[in-house]
Length: 83
Image (tube, rainbow, N blue to C red; front, top):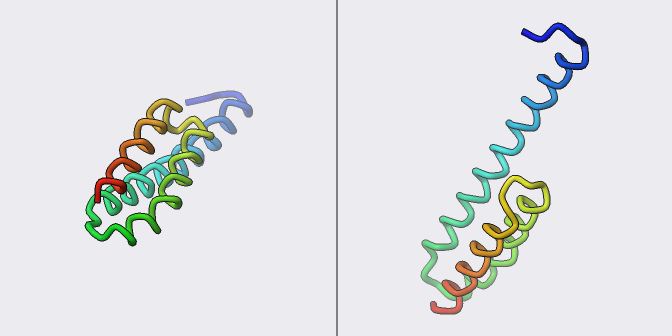
């Protein structure tokens, strides 16, 4: 257990950040799965910008790596274009 005030605060703040990051990451993964399951091109095209936005937010906050975000976005874009 931590002894210093600053260490106790760091534990509290890092736990809050961890929970928020997990929520955002899981939400994005679910959105990606839903987009990949769609078979209607118009629906997929309408949903793509919001999913790309979620991925960009994760990359900006360093929850996922920038290259992983780029790979996800390009793969999703190719999937929607192929419908």
